Length: 430
Image 1 (cartoon, helix red, strand yellow):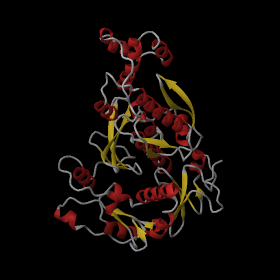
Image 2 (cartoon, one colour; image 1 turned 60 degrees about the vertical axis):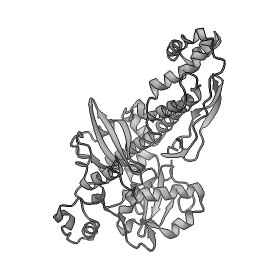
Image 3 (cartoon, helix red, strand yellow; image 1 turned 90 degrees about the vertical axis):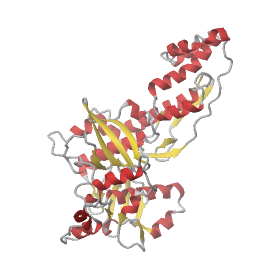
Image 4 (tube, one colour; image 1 turned 30 degrees about the vertical axis):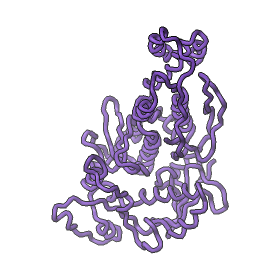
């Protein structure tokens, strides 16, 4: 399981207790420190409920538990003093609350390991409640959340805030919200209301290929549409057949992506290869998947900060591959390199022979990563959402959480992003 981290800053918390179980309750988080990172935690230990009622009273316990699940914490606490049967029912009411509000694969896995009629599920319920409270509070106090609030948008369904099926659901869904906003502000749409598609609620997020590809379901009124996105950047690679024809989305799931997904899912799935293995870049001696080998060795001693920098570098690389690598017309790496250099491209043999093409991710040399920085040259911290990427030619200012550019060395952070983020041209928070 994972728990969110907000820019390595711990939230303010206070101790509370309920039903003989003490938990951490989040009360506040520092503003502008929203980050889509996760760290592993363990499931709280679950033990049997003590002091069971008499056998003659146990037949009433389950029906009492259903009723008690609708009461407030204070009322349930009072009910524990009535009798052993009521006390036992209060403990069992946690299971009913979990079933009502957090039903999904995560809960099912817990239920399979612990008998529902005898286990105190309050520790697990409190953990799930705190996860939702944490993410909601962190998002609402972030620049992304404030922008969505200004449009009157609640971007995620209640089920997604709870990460019902996978602990990474809310992370991927919020990254999709971020990337959707980036495309709207940086690329634009042909719709009369540029913010119209920002108002579509993200209804669901399901992992398709572990650690690489997710299916995002969005709701527009009564209409549901499904899109496939990359986990690290949440850029859309294709849409399901039920998706509408929108300018901002690709027109369908391309054959190479369809083949890749099919080869990594289902009974016929073969040995797992990574998307990054399809990346092509120049100068393999000095760069590993487009990132300086010398720099990677240098940050290996920086512990968590080094890992964060490496993650931002990998997202930047994937965000900067030639557009046809991800969507649009399929092209080979050679075709993309030739077109990028202004040379005429050639028809590929795969297209002539009718073979299903494979994924080609081509990274231009001027987007090779020399280093990643979270501070200015003078050591001043950048806005928590930003990082600076040093490439062979220039510096780029990017969003940490999806690697996409919001500024460059010569011009600084773009005006629209200065306004949205609340920073100056140098990327320093105001």
